[in-house]
Length: 106
Image (cartoon, rainbow, N blue to C red; front, top):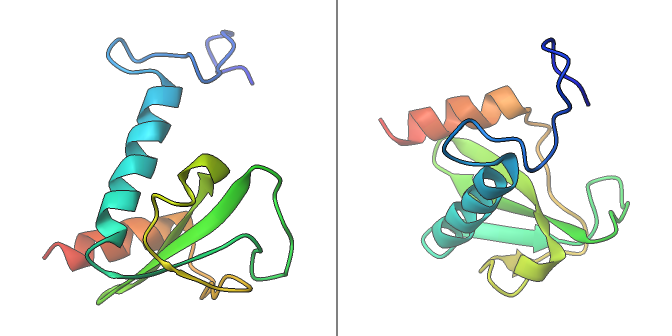
């Protein structure tokens, strides 16, 4: 992928402090830590029953609503959620996740 500046953007692209790969790993680790304190679930199949090779879906039920992310298969044991046959995704978007996280922190 290229940005407007013509440079290629990939996992090693940095903002001068962190690479995209580092930031993604931070997000995954934080999400796993949160799963230990909230009602959470995980599934290897998305809500349509599809499997993404090397990934699973993890969700947390906050008082403000459900949030979920795709996590690398290597974090399966780290994520403390109940295993579900199919992800019980409620249709939320990336924008909904931000709103729900913000509302949960009020």
